[in-house]
Length: 366
Length: 182
Image (cartoon, rainbow over all chains, first blue to last red; front, side, top):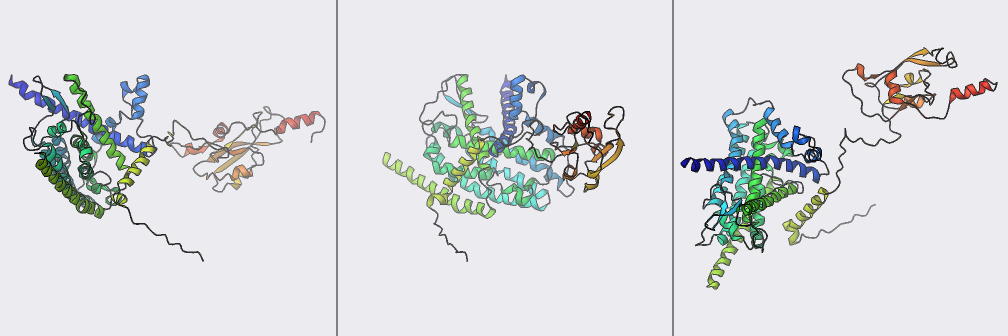
């Protein structure tokens, strides 16, 4: 009897990890494909798995879209020769990729990705752990991701990785502040005193049933989006691995599967960032602003809500890639001044404004 | 003296200072390119179209009657700047082509070393018989140095027939039949 209670969460967790890793590998493919489309190229279109790839029309279509490419990419990393440079600090050198990937995978525990209606008729989130401080947990854990980068840069014992690591840690610390301050107004509105959900992400999504927060709090959304770009080390903020001035950045000395882990970690961060933005500002699984959810109360409705959530996440991932090929990289001092001189004051101003607004609302509404 | 024109720079508007309109314009531009036609040529599957006057691999051609045009005068061999051509002159088989034998020669061996060839086209330019042409073959590869030397058979294979209208030997024959050999 108790076995099920223990085994079921493990099964759920394993399923979620495998789906998440699948998403990571396919967002690598999406990156390559969208990049090539934006640049007028074709992108990976040759990898063909036996059997499925040889079904007459479908096989060619899938091959042309590069659907089998992630398998080839992953296997390439697996079968490459494992090279460890002689000048590295071995323990931390091996630890760094794991430390980079683990936080990104840990944060997904509290991420609600759909909703179902339990037998008593209450809407419940589909989430591994519906803790009340979900957002704090995500902010706390995802900040640990910088340790992977710093450890990698430091243990490589080589100047370019070291520079990349220093830059990225400074950048992540700067933008963390703006990020945290940007989402405070969100929770001030959604988790008002006496609300039942507290700081959990489920509460935020439920509060967006009628109006998405991106419409209601555009400034918060903008600041948060910019900060997420910076936190995930994506262009235009990829200070940590700016190829032009730092060779490969923090992972210059890494090869084969250790590099693969960094790579997956980057995309895991991108997916988490996208999912978080969808949760906080794009209404999660809520259908469209102003429209009631068409999801029914049965299992099918739950599946639909998950699919709708995923569709939004995919759009955000696409947006990340789109921006990557639109904006050039900022100079390092520009990144710093944008973070400290513009985003942080803006976020504080936004917070103060919303505080006053809520105070006024409370004062005059009663 | 050229007149120096000073253009006054307008101060940025508030919208421009936020960069957001510019970013949106950029996103629009990249978004548009996403739906444009790809310019990639998928090379081994699709071949580029070669212009008619392309100077590719030098080849030997035959005339419309299937006769060798080369008379092994060796002009190309002498003019070749990197000395890529080597010709061994030989006699024409008297039994196969009795009217040409002892009048013209033909190459016994004709080697062009493609590792030396610089595709300058001087051999084509110098040839009095219009027998050697730089044609549209542009990708040449081999596993050994020997393979990269095109011999006579390979050269004729690559060259094929030139549909010219000279019919040198037909005219000669017709003239002979009318009683004036020259």
